[in-house]
Image (cartoon, rainbow, N blue to C red; front, side, top):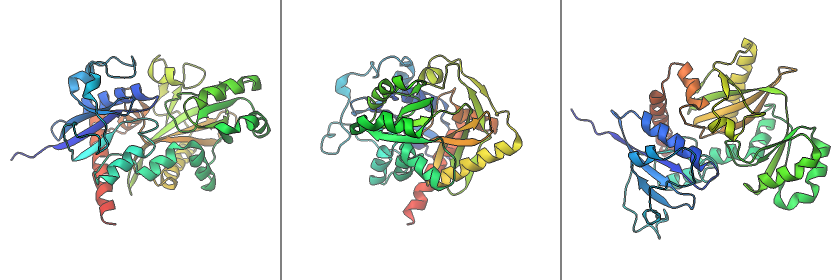
Length: 354
């Protein structure tokens, strides 16, 4: 008996500084999809927010991290996704969509909201929980309410320039990390060791976001945990990354390929249990579903565990921590993608009951 394959719409690219990372995640997802069950359809969004269909050969031949657009496609191939502008876009539909859009306009609930409006199943967290997790300041305030330790922080809008230095000096100790509030992949992050350097670090962060968060630096081991599921949650063992650079920045993650990993992390059993318990709790208090990678700091001096942030569409490349931690559990990249698709269908069906 011939069974119809499930069509999977892989959505990637997007209007984000993490555009190129998304392309790499799409390559890995496309290459590792179980073709006996699934039929992939590639949907590319360029940096201007226009959409087009993409074939697999074009995607796989795209150079890594060179340019902000797939140069093999002409500009005329792209069209707006909005109904009143997209009459020239060839119609298509999929059984389920798999966004691998990192950062703003992808990981922040916007694409999820679009799919929810269309009544379409998709992989990953809901629009509401995606928005919560992507907003670092909001997520940290929720962590604090849930008694989950997180590094001390302050946050500012662009019109707060006059008080940034004074309030940061009054609240935090050096070093501090200055970050865009709603961005990932360590884009726009600066480690500040001297107060004289704070203004430039803030300027860089404001280039990417209208809100900047400043966190107190912790001398710590960087620990990551993968979580997946809906009502029933599965938590991986922790992994540790040892950055080649001073902290785990964009180059460390995607360019230099010199970061070292301990998978699993070499931790005392009690500390490992604490981290996994905190990961489960954090996933729950942000009302998450589908998948997340949760980042922690293990302070070297005290062994105190701090939750740093949650990534609802974690890096999905061959070298990313999210799939590596599941491989430790005996779950291959292909099996992981299949599970996430199943979770997407499950969550959609549960929501339809309400």
